[in-house]
Structures are given as structure tokens and as C-alpha cells.
Image 1: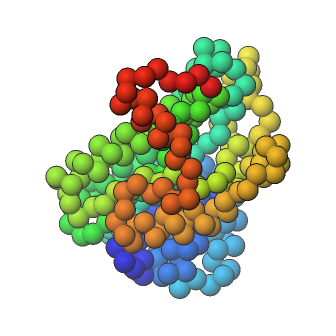
Image 2: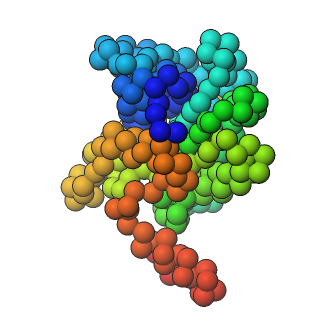
Length: 284
């Protein structure tokens, strides 16, 4: 897909971070972009700000909850009713869980439910709502699932929920690509690993719905990624617009593994070597 002009794109988690930047850049290229988020107020503010730039395309917002199949189906119905088709689907919504606060076995089940509902069932709900009609159209289309190097490439043991949910998302995206290559080769698939450095977003301060809160073990107060970077010694960060630009370059090239060339792959390489050699992992 070499051009986004007049393409219809849907971006979940589009009110901020990488999702917002994807919408901004595609609209600038002439796409009709629908962003969705559970935060309706922030969604409306984002749409207003992006449209104030008078892009060649357009940006509109519809509040939806990726963890609710009926919400994603309603979003798909609305988009297809208005435009008749969808060319690009970005399953981008993600959350920070604060799951480093307790060992694996002490984390509340609501942490596990929230992480997997957003990072695994969210993309599944998105695919289920949009893909069948994208297949029927028999025109070129593309789906991007946003994973993470944390779990998608190798596990960071401090964040068991986040890590395992992103590992699951990587696997299901690989399966989706293989099955579409057989059943609907006109639809491409990619899995995005934001980077190459810590991405400057508000992920760690994700608003958590009450249904996923456990008062007996509340998550810590969220912080901006920039504050985390300072705590880590002022490490270099990657702006979200750089991640979006690289992602869209990969879409244009039909690239599945969307891993920036400057990403540090040493953790993945060590893990792969351990697996091949049947060697026990080195304890962190």
C-alpha cells in the first residue's frame, strides 16, 4: 500500500501517543481516519486539535471500548455504514498495569484480566469486527497489531502481565498473517514493536475502569514515561511520532516485523540461543 490518500483507517487507542500520531500522519497524507478510545473527552479534544491543522484528509472520533465485543462491532457498523469499506486497521490500544508492584502470584486477577482484555482480546475483538467485511471487499488492506519488545521479543520478569499479554499478541498476529496469506492474500498484516528506545507516551498513567480495580492491591499512581526515563538516569527516549512514521513506512512496504533497525536485539538473541541450545535461561 504505497499511498494513504482516500484510504479509510481505524486506529484504536487513538486519543494519545502513537495512535494519535498515526492518525495525524495518515490524515496529512489524505486518509480518512477514525480514532477510537474509551476516554470520550480526550478523544474529542484530539480530533479538534488534529483537524485544526487542516490536513489533506480527515480525522473523526468515536468512543469505543476494545475489551467489549459489542462496542467494537458497533464501531465497525458505524464506519462501514458511512464509508462502505475499511482499508487499514490499527489495533493499537495498550495500557500500563503497574504489575511490577507485586510478585506474579500476588497480583490480583483483575490485573491479569485487564492486561489480557486490552492487549489480547482487544485486537481479537477488532479483527472479529472489521476483518470479515475487509475480506469480502477483495481489495488491498492492512492490519497492524501493536506489541512490544517486552514480551513480544523477550520477557522482562518485572512485568508479568504486560509481558505475557504482549507475547500472546505477537503469536496470534503471526497466526493471523499465515491464515490470511492462504484465505485472503489481499490483506497484509504487521506487528509493531514501538522503539527503538523507551517511547515517550502516557502508557503508565492509563485510566483503569472500575471493573478492573481491586481495592485490596491497588496499582501505584501512574507516571509519565519521561519521568521514568529520568529515574533511569535520564535515558534517551523515542518520540511517538517517530514510531508512527516508521510503522507507516512498514505498511507501505508490506513489512510484517515492524522492529526499528536501531532496536537493541541482544535480549532476543540471547533468548533464541538459549532455546536452540536447550540451555536454562540466565536468571535476571
